[in-house]
Image 1: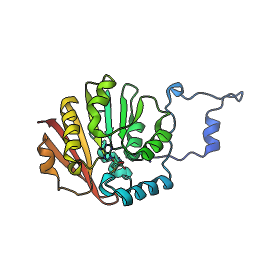
Image 2: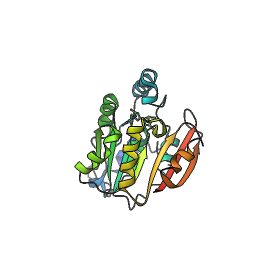
Image 3: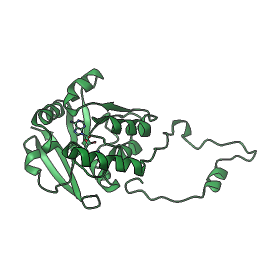
Image 4: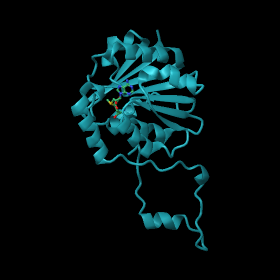
Length: 232
Ligand SMILES: C[S@@+](CC[C@H](N)C(=O)[O-])C[C@H]1O[C@@H](n2cnc3c(N)ncnc32)[C@H](O)[C@@H]1O
């Protein structure tokens, strides 16, 4: 499902009929040559993989279940899709937020999705490696500088973070936020999910001048997103 989408269900035989010419050959719909690959759904098995990892590793995974569509949409709600050239996702998990980014990704935008866990990276590659402009990278968020330098990326328009940023080990958190500080463009946004509503405002204000919080009730558990701009 896509955020805010209204879906009109057309039966499959009728859809096929619409794409046939009078002599029975297939008609390409407008822009079909550039149509992105359909997005592969995540499976219930992958949700339980996520839960199993949480039960075994706790705060390293930080959430019992992948983000809901409502949470994912709120997290990417401040991206300027027309202007963004580079979006970096941190802690992509099994791709709940990645899916919503990929649905809106413009041809001129590159998405780099970073995840540390090898099993989650396999899921992400299964789901998204067909998509142009999307790179799935297995790495620690602490290595952001090296990863982006190695790809010639000097500016990032939006960081979308599923990381438990306030409770990361200080050395990881400081390295990651120093990279964000160096790379985020003026007017860019750093948006980070949380499952503890309203609690971390002062934490994010230590690193950003402009911090707002968006409550998301439709998530398990309810939580929200910190949208941060203007690095200190
Ligand atoms: C709360 S989950 C969010 C997953 C997904 N973005 C979502 O919203 O469903 C946090 C994710 O961050 C990953 N993670 C935690 N620490 C990390 C680090 N230092 N570097 C990269 N990924 C990390 C975990 O493996 C986990 O997949």
